[in-house]
Image 1 (tube, rainbow, N blue to C red):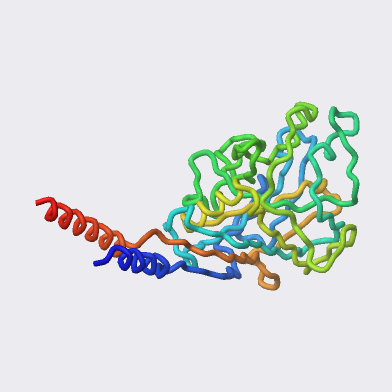
Image 2 (image 1 turned 30 degrees about the horizontal axis):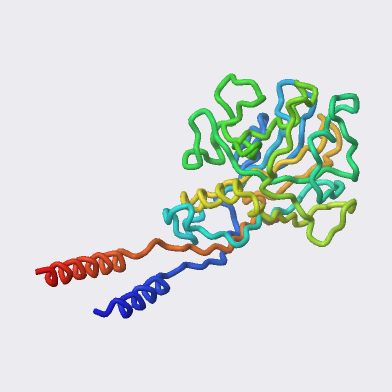
Length: 310
């Protein structure tokens, strides 16, 4: 076969490899869980609350976290190689079902949460506190494939701080870290850091400073411009399990007003559980047919060259 003709056919074969494009919606999570040390009914509550416990020794600063997870393999093929998932867009939409609170669509640095006399303190320039989205990390032998919505919060007898089996995962200096205590009050702010977020909650149809009421949709557009976040999502799709953690640092007090986010779970029969939207293109590896064909062609060329030598 003429080399130019074969090259042209090879290119056609490469172009012909099916790049699998998917615009998919997961209307219900596989698991959702209020990750809170005093949640006596994990996996069966109708709401997942998020609030902080800043300045309370023994508690994570991001005290109440809300986990949502999806079996993505039902609509997007798993095990295609993490780098082969081209993620064009990714959104998570949660619905608030609690009391009113002030909408803040912008990120607040950890320094704005410190005590006013602490080193590095800066006043918050706007009203309210944001809703933040992270990945999900694991410890104590748990993993994405073993952790369920009814798994234990932490090992028996463990304290409440920095021990949860599944935690909000962000990035600091390129490393994956537990962001549950990124304010770090214990060191007067000296060890605090601003983590790389997966997304900031945006209230559809509202402006900064407006009131968020029950029934309001909160959308997180995932931060695909971050190499770390993108890699986390690609690895999750390759595994077939995508788990995320919504958090906030809204104030809460025993018996006080519930002025913090509260999201519908799949157990809430009148609400809307978390909706995951993905636009993904899978770029497949060259097919075995093509590789065999190329190998055969090279052997043929080698045989012909040896024949001419004789």
